[in-house]
Length: 434
Image 1 (tube, rainbow, N blue to C red):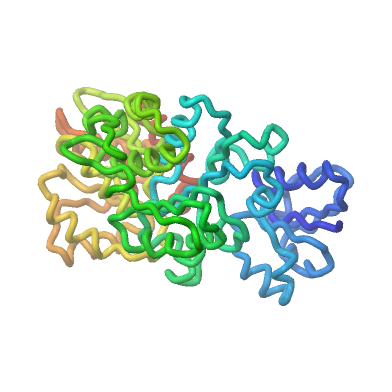
Image 2 (image 1 turned 60 degrees about the horizontal axis):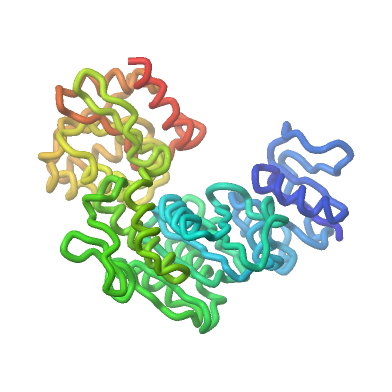
């Protein structure tokens, strides 16, 4: 076939390698005119990279590119557009696939499930939005392998296959600068469940109506978590099917929000292995992923936490409740105009948690307006801080012995940093240099 690889990033490179090995005729299309492509391969780079894609038999979209942008330029080629995840699920030799989506907690939950299955003796591969692009480990799979895929709405919006086990965590408004509106965001998430059969299982967070709505798609068996028959917290312990797994105070992960992630992972893993001791061993030893309420170090009696992954204020709220003591919170970033009014009420209700809120970035003024409207005045807008070192220095000057300083921005990073990892790494470097 004649195939266009649209977007030559991590996913695009994995797609290129996969289709090149099958000796298809490939072209690479990317908006970056300076992107390096393999020798001898047709390349359409720069402004016109989406033009005339109808001449190809297949168009492989990278996750970050909304399909509507392809179809606006190339009407009527819907059936030609696919993705790395679609191709993986089409050819995957094992039916043992677990897909995880939701607004926050996907990476943590996917990793927990992977570690639980590995501890139970399974061969497991983790991919999707975390780990490796799944086409990269396709040659290693057998019918007995297990695959855990963390899947964002960008990857799900045109999904054509559903995994055997689909998990939806808490869902709140997010990525509304990428999606046309909230209904499109929810519809994208729903596709994870849409093609399930009665032999499949759809797991959802019982405490979130949007999660329940998303999981209602498809014909899979519906299984809630955070209430029976899925894993739930009862008398300070996580239990499922009448078996206590561990006490919540034994979890290595910080914060009540991680009780949800733990229960989601237990519920999914329980469909594969009912070995409570194996599952317990993971919950009591896994301390979390980088940039998720990560303790960097303690300096002069102040603990510094990196929660750069928090790109929405619901995640910031979780960090505020998870980290003990008075806190200097570093908030703000790229302005995507997602709803934030709810945070004013939260800040007032939890005012005793804060030493100060330090507002930075493009969103600082709007966030200040929300706090003013709620009559919350314990904040500073810092327009002078242009580097992470300056931000950390300012936060340090506000803290007292016994406090915590928490980078949990509640906004995307693109106004000042490449991505959340760059933001988190710069924060950690600034803290290490104190």
